[in-house]
Each structure stands twice: as C-alpha cells, then as structure tokens.
Image (cartoon, rainbow, N blue to C red; front, side):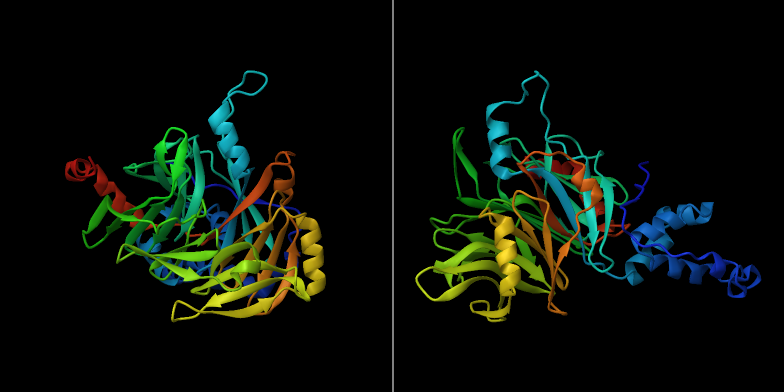
Amino acid sequence: MLLPFSYTFTPGTSSTNVTDSVTGPWMDTRIWSKLPQTLIDRVLAFLPPPAFFRARCVCKRWYGLLFSNNFLELYIQISPRRHWFLFFKHKSLKSYIYRNNNSTNDSGGKTMTANICEGYIFDPYDIAWYRIPFSFVPSGFSPAAASGGLICWVSDEAGAKSIILCNPLIGSLSQLPPTLRPRLFPSIGLKVGPSSIDVAVAGDDLISPYAVKNLSTESFHIDAGGFYSLWGTTSCLPRLCSLESGQMVCVDDRFYSMNYNPFSVLAYEIAANSWCKIQAPMRRFLRSPRLVESMGKLILVAAVEKSKLNVPKSLRLWRLQPCGTTWIEIERMPQQLYLQFAELGGGHGFDCVGHGEFIAIIIRGSIKVLLFDILRKMWQWIHPCSCINGVGDDDDDELHGFAYEPTVTTPVTGLLDQITIPIFQSFSD
C-alpha cells in the first residue's frame, strides 16, 4: 500500500512561537484527554491536508484514519472545499512535440524522458507553497486536466490515448480504457462528481502518420447508477474549427475550449453530445485569450490591442451570461500593472487557470504568476516556490497550472474497478 506523501514547506511560511500557550492551563490534559473520539474526528476532518498528514504522526489511531471508512465518510460530508492550484514545470508544447517526433536521445546517447516527478501546490488563502511527488505515475504521461481532487494524465505517444486518474495525496492510480481513435495532442475535458466521471477527448485526429485534423470527439462516462459508455459516444467537431490543444474548462455540464482564426468559444454539451459555437467579445482585438472557471461561471481573460484607435492596451475579463451567448466585462487590469506585466511577458503571451474566487495568470516561458482575487478586486505577484527555482534552467521550461481541490478520498474511482469485469472488456473491444 502506497503511503501518503510528506509535505515540503518552502521558506517564507510564517511560524509562531507557541511554547507558552502549550504549557498554559487551557491545554490541561485532564480536560482535553476526555474529548469524545467522534468530536476529535470532526476536528481532524476540518484540517487542511498539510496539518492532517502531520497529525497522523501523533498516534496509531490517527494514522489509521486514512483507512477508516467511517472517518472517510465523515470527511466527505464536512471537510471544506479548498480552491487551491497545482503547477507543473516542464517543457513548452512546441519543444515537447519537436522532441517526441525527432529524437529520444540526448547528445550523450542517454534516453530522454518526459516524466514529471513532482508538482507544486499553491494555497492562495495563506500564500503558501507545498511540493508533492508524482514518482508513482508511469513515465510517458503528462498532466492534462484536474477535477474533484483527481489529476488526469494522458499518454504522450501519438495514437490511441491511455488515460490515468490519480489522487496525489494518497498516491492512488486508476486507469481508463484507451481511446478508440488515434490522436496526437488532443484537448481533454474532465468532470468528476460524487458519483460519476465524465471525460471528453477532442481534436488532433491523426489522419496520417504526419498530419492531424480536428474532426471528432470521444466521451467516456460511468456513474453509480450503472450507466456507462466507454468511448462509445462520439460526435463531430464544428466544421473548420481550430481547437486549442490542451485542457478544456468545465462549467456545469459543459466543456469549453477556445477556437482560433477567428476567435470564438466552442461549447460541448455533455448530455446532448453536441457542440455549439459562441462568439467572443472584441474578437478582432484579442491577444492570448484564455478560458477559466470561477465560482461556477465561465470567464474569458485576454489582452486587448486596438492599434488604430486611441485606446490603451489592457488585459480584460469577461463573464459569460446565463443566456450562454453574451458577455459582460467585469474587470480590467490597472494600466500601470499591465505595462509591467507586458514587459515581463516579452510578447510570449500567457496562460490562465481559475479556481473559486482566484485566477492565476502565468507568463509563458517563465515561472512568474500573477494572482487576481475577484471578490476583493486585488492583484498581486506570487513569490515563486523555492523548489521551482531549483528545477532546471532551460528557457523552454514553463509552468502549467490546474485548479486543484485537495481531498484524501475519492470513492468515485471505485467505479473504474468494474471495468475489469469481462462484459466491460468485450464492450470496449
């Protein structure tokens, strides 16, 4: 059985001298030692993951809580949701495709691998970083999406895609059947609910060993009610679409992805298995448009440049209205901050990831992250994790972020164990 990982705290996190308070009368063991175990369990269920895993070192009973069904059921019911982020540092997409299609050996004859051995969790509430290992993930896979505490890893090799869902806090791995159609670098949509899993794989269909085209979507569904579809549901992408390679954004029961030339938003209705196109605001003047989910809403983040008009360059945020076709501008980056942001970006563009009330904006080709709090209307640069600074010095290295909700249990992955039943195997064949 794999043991949960140990958090590594980066320098800069504050600590308080609690010597006096621990020895004070209010910590009298004659009082606190008589607390009911059920009450103690509720307190432990509310702890954030770093504190919970430290608490497991106290005694055998607390260590075993991670394997107690009663505690895990309580944890699911009362543990608060945490809108954290998970970042990986690896090669840019352009460098990755070149490397995997040209050579697998470096100048010294050693085999080059794309295995990502660790990630970096960021807590936007306490502005704290934690390092987490991913050595248990097989080599040849890259992170593609995240939902419900699970990280989706997709095989790097061109062809039918193998997909793994992992819970990094407990080191669990669950594998899905391979997709039916060969692809290169498709867009991945993941939605993990309390009793269901939905995965959509779209675009980058291999029409020859040397050419790809955005043609189709394959979807995977399984739920506790016994309904399942192992890539058996397919649909055609909109004609002449230029789908953004990478992850899709899930809002309610839809997956969204950017479409290029010209800019628009593609929406995939999971239940209806159909695509529709939504016109983007100011589409002729957008630069590096990105979609994020924030507090259950779809947000479009983009730089705006009107070269022929007397309008200053800026970075703006729009929210998609409930009607699903119109946008409303909700925020603009302060002009002085945007000038600094544009100078640091150097024309390389940026990526975004949203979670809860936070939106993290990552400058491409760097480890610089700008955090925006929608509720407090506050922008701030995030000091990078010291562990990130120590990983590689290649100019092609950059951060890729995901919305991550840490949880010590994901019982929905138990549904995937049914795939080993012969009836499932014959269906997928």
